[in-house]
Amino acid sequence: MVFSQNGIFDDMATPAASVPPTAPQIAAPVIVWFRDDLRISDNPALNEAVETGRPVICVYIRDEHSPDLRAPGAATRWWLAGSLRALSRTLTERGNTLILRTGKGSEIVPGLARLVGAAAVHWNRRYDAGGLAVDDTVAKALAARNIPVRTFQASLLYEPRSVRTMAGRPYTVFTPFWRQVRSLDMPRAPLPAPARITSSPQTNGLVTDRIEDWHLEPTRPDWAGGLRKAWTPGEAGARARTEQFLTHGLPGYAKLRDRPDLRHTSRLSPHLKFGEISPFQLWHAARLAITSSRGGTRPDAADLEKFLTELGWREFSYHLLHHHPKLHSDNYQRQFDRFPWKDDSAALTAWQTGSTGYPIVDAGMRELWTTGWMHNRVRMLVASFLVKHLLVDWRIGEAWFWDTLVDADIANNPSGWQWVAGSGADAAPYFRIFNPVLQGEAFDPEGDYVRAWVPELAQMPREFVHEPWRAPAMTLRTAGITIGKTYPEPAVDHRAARDWALAAFAALKPAVA
Image: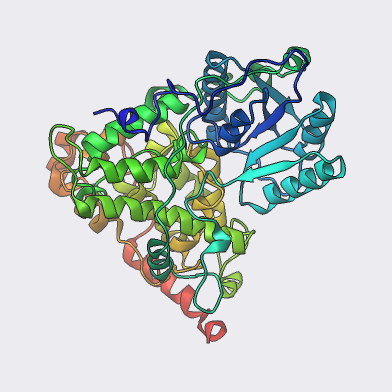
């Protein structure tokens, strides 16, 4: 079953609105400013622009100059190049052109609006402090010239400011937040994609950058081979990934999503991060999947609810970011400002390169380096290991993920790290310290995930694959392993590291009290 037939993923064959005949004079265009919404389906800013009947000018600005905008990491720069190419092709097929500019959005958008005599400027809202500041400046500059601005909700199911406790305060715990969200109205239905997006004649005279000139992709060396093999950036790639997940991943999702050796996660996070698919499309597609005949095993209500809850965690992260704009740099719980982090470059390097001697940790870090992605359960494990075994500041780990993840999200990434560290809202208690051996045995029981990413251990039998240092000498020889040479010794002893972490946490208790 193809979901485009149900109006959830529009097949792009039906226009969002009929376009009036072209007037003899050049009509004032509507500018659509793309940001983290690189799609044409379920794009309210674009949809409304087309419905005006006016020509549309589509623009994307690479803004790494405005204050407080967090510059993208290397992996997301790679993805951005592919996503922009895909969007450009789609717009060309619909009769339009994507204009690319570099500089401050607060200067480029008002300047472009003046140049083309824009009738209005549309954009979909973003929620980080730096982006909001830029948008506010642009809106004021356009208002001064009587150019209307229209903004739309497109990347979140619910506006962060709209979800409040009974006392009118923001939520700090996920469960009551999600309970409140689930009591609200159903998220709106996805919007169709326009079949044609009329271009303005003025577009031909506009200067546009070339994606190649932005040097978003690595060349010397070209380390992106694994990313290219694993991913297809763009709206079409997001659709294909969704269809695959709904058919093969969603059935059994509630019970199997924590298994990195199985394919029961959606792997849609980078597509959501770049807005190649919307949460509204995913919400309604997942709901439809449990009632549709797709062949094979059908997902049940528990699978659906668990997947919707994962979308809820994304909403909660943005809720936190909205009320705590420095989530990636400041401890949510300020007593952690006193935490005695270690400055251990050797331990950090071992973690970054997947050489800690703990197979499940090393497998995750190598998967990350190769594909730009890591299973969510393993993300928690490797983050906990860095913070609670090596006592390295969570911000250092967050920065590494920011640079290497293709789905490095301005809200999800820091909120996840603070959750693991114990410094965040609704955080895991600091004294809850994952045992990497037990976690590996629980969630990679046959060792298949480890063997896939740590080939040194490919011949290690199941009973020792998560703690090879305990294997008998004969088993190690048979597997071709020499601990300390072909595979590293454990960077730290789990029991000793746990004691260090608990002692460090105990030092905070007077401040907590």
